[in-house]
Image (cartoon, rainbow, N blue to C red; front, side, top):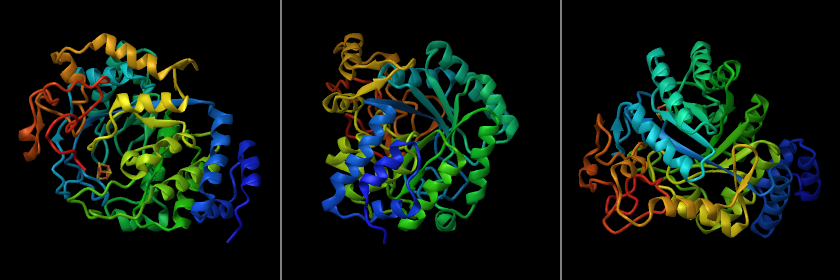
Length: 410
Ligand code: SF4
């Protein structure tokens, strides 16, 4: 194995060049005694290209569950017995309310996600209308769509409707892909990233670590993403949902997660690297160190599982001395965002609009406010507002489970 020459790797990455495959493997193979050195190397690169800025992204689950594909990690696959909420398409009003709540919490980008193999042209038109409303209410927010496999015409339609980016994760290396999915291939995913790019959309594509892949495969997928020229790389850590084939699969430690993030940063020095789903679950008390490496996180919850509350995210950034990335390069004090939200919402109970904005859009949090939902059976116990009496989150970006007796979807 190549020795860990962090000075040389840092110098390479600071010049905007990827470290070598051998160096990337050395980062993944480094020991705990070297961990802080690895984090410091990645941090120097992060600070050169992104300073203290953190981009906040907010997920809106437009359509949850019922996907015919068989991705073994996914709680929304039709074959999974995960009990996540299942519903078909939020209304434009519901989606806009959820997106606006995320923007109010500091989100620079809203990610509109719909489960399924890919959209029909009618679905694309529907999402285009939602994008129009979101942009009308929040002119400066970036919108990223994540709707599955896409034709070039659909990509152009989304772009014309105002979408800025398209997310389609490679998820794992080509050599591991058949192990995690049989209904589509790695090349289908690569094709979609390229299609979105040709349609004028900024490509966002990442991976899920912790699915039995080797170090070589992790390096392979990072180099593949770099080769594809993606603009943002969400690094997810497997949430081993009960009821999925990967239920109970636990191979990650906080140290391993930090090495993976550092490797991603050093392979893609000047690209947005996002600590995505599984951040809280796997990094635990090491979350702040991940922010020294990554310049982007999701605010609040994930598609079908709880994340850290939005206010805790903002406090974490403030504690680290980081700022929230604004629309025009400005840097926003996270505590100012928090104060503004508190001033707006006070400590009174939820109004109807707040309920809708609570993240009710997302698979884990429909509560009773979104029509057309085919709620999973355990959701019957959810309080009408989705928030327990007397519990008032400061940043209203929570989903099912937050502040309630309803278990999280993990
Ligand atoms: S295609 Fe997407 S929504 Fe469908 S099972 Fe795979 S990851 Fe889940």
